[in-house]
Length: 116
Image (cartoon, rainbow, N blue to C red; front, side, top):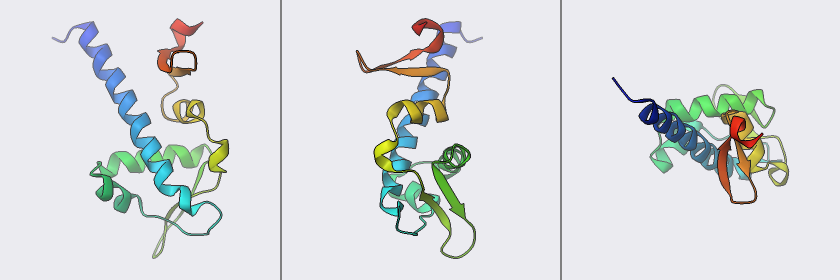
């Protein structure tokens, strides 16, 4: 049986991984903003040696949040539809994992229950 502390650490690390991978995804898609080009998530995953299914799930979350747009078929993939200058780390965290928020004072993630 796993201890509660170990479970917390594992959940926290998964959250950090989501945010890191999400930032990689968004920075990789920055050239698509306003260009009409679409990038395949599997290509991005291969370039950075990241798990493609996990990156695809993150892309779908960003799409639901109105940050990305997708197109199917040949030449399809995802493109950035929100201005990259208007996407903050707080936005990324809230889209990918709403249990945490960014603390600009010490540049750490804190749980929402602790920050109130």
